[in-house]
Length: 134
Image (cartoon, rainbow, N blue to C red; front, top):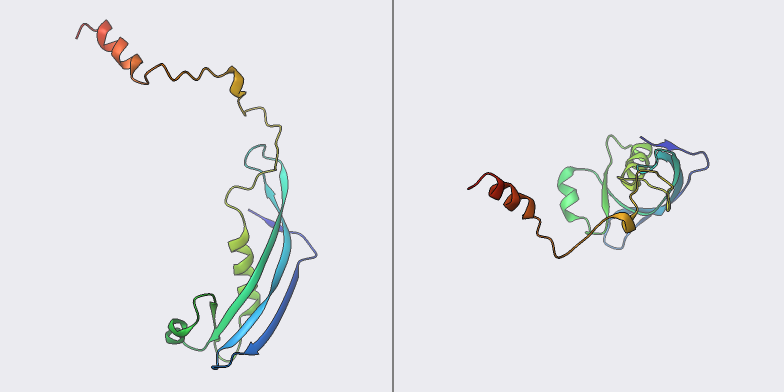
């Protein structure tokens, strides 16, 4: 779950390309409060993206858009701008938000762990097999 901080900034500009495509380009900048998955404390996540949307008036027009454009379906003469911005923000949210460095107690100290390349991971199974007399 994320809570959008106040002060989000969206700048958009629309134009028509040479061959008729209607395009909206812009920048999106926002901050969201999320829970760090390491220490479970609040973490601020910076969300930034460049927007390049192609306006389409039917689903069949989506096939004709350039590959670097995301389609926005215009319904009944209306552009669902708020919904498109919200969708863009959701796509920017990280799956596993974390602090750059956490002082979480559960993170193990790598020096205290015995990592030996000489031991086979199946040595325990072989020992069990020998104990059973097989």
